[in-house]
Amino acid sequence: MSKTRFRRTARRTARFTVSTGALAAAALGGAAVSIALLTAGFARSSISADTFRQLDLFGEVFEQVHENYVSEPDDGELIEGAINGMLSELDPHSSYLTAEDFETMQEQTRGSFAGLGIQVVMDNEGPDKGFVKVVAPIDDTPAAKAGMQTNDLIVAINGEAVLGMTIDEAIAKLKGPKGTKVEISVVRDREKPQFDISLVRDIVNVPSVTARAEGQFGYIRISNFSEQTEDGLLKALKDLDKDIPGGAKGYVVDLRSNPGGLLDQAVAVSDAFLDGGEIVSTRGRRPKDTLREMGTPGDKINGKPMVVLINGGSASASEIVAGALQDRNRALLLGTKSFGKGSVQTVIPLQNGLQGALRLTTARYYTPSGRSIQALGIEPDILMPVIYPGQDEVAHRPQEKDLPGALAAEGAEERAAEANRAEVLRLKKAAEGAEERAEEAAKEESAEKTADAQTEPAVEPVQCGLKEDGEPIDCQLGRALEILADNAAFRRLLADAGAARSE
Image (spheres, rainbow, N blue to C red):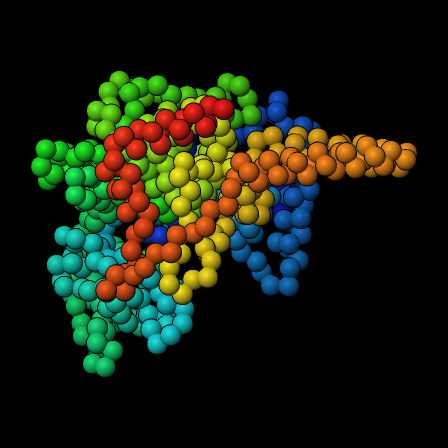
């Protein structure tokens, strides 16, 4: 094999801007996407000669492995491993998507796929370990029409035992082209034999928006931001005004544990509740990369009061919506601090998607007031942690800043350097015999820490109970409805929150 050479290429490809951290732990987690055109390939003017020498070194290593490894390696796996290794050095959200992963991501952003319409998990312990368990069938899908139920176990697919498969392998076998058949073997009563169900796959639309009336108020749950979110929200608002006599008096928008989704849908949701103005901006490493997303005139709910629920699982696109509504003093935020994923991922198809895609962090998100979301998150106006029977304390949820290699909060490096310089100066003074000045500095430092503690007071978690069926009572939703029920109190809390942020 001759020494590997790297040729520059220029190729027109589609680019997708992604607002989520990962491909989703659940079936739908989101990739947030605005489409543009990109010229890909090496640009000699921006890559040094030394870098090309390093690339040549990589080619030599590849050649040696290919020729001399103890067993014949798979060249494709070697290249994929090298790509993943390179991207893993950047941050937790930059990665390589295989063609299959890229297709899955596109399905997630569409919010639809060809399959049976069941949400499933696989237990890692207990008597159901290793089998596919039905969480819930989705309404009006082949699974729902066939009568599948929560907690059904799928033990075989087309005669092949599920035991030994991964959850992804099982899901891949359940999905397939519209109109094709699949036979599944199901165990419902664990004391009775399994039975078979024959299903015909169809297009499944997974709603990202659900809504219901809560007395005089509308409750809107947005579980992710897919292509269907804006339409789902507008339909929910219309239906709630019909279902509630005289129309909804206010709204609770639930973004808890929403991992993110499409950027344009996050903008559209924010725009529905705002009367024009800036919603979010993105800033890359070059000034020309700065983009501002602006809203359109008109508020779909005519200024009615809103409370937005967030928690540590509210990430990316969710934080864009929460930050925009908070900065514009349009809604009260209630719950706990959000995840803090404020970076933009651009998904670049490779060879038109035939070789997968590159997901690359290219910018940071900023709220209308210029706050960076990255590693900081969105603080709620009303902090309300909750615990349930059997819990001694609020469960810790890892945040963006806890991820290995995560981008630091903007300015964190400069603040750390300044703190280090101050510490060096303090030690120098002490060494020169200026103990009294060092003591004074220590007092000032202690006062600063006390002030910091006062600006972020500890809040005792609210003890929430359980319903008769064992389901947890949603104390945060209950508190949001109480606030909305007293319009004067809501307006006062909103004004106080706005004044506190402007200080």
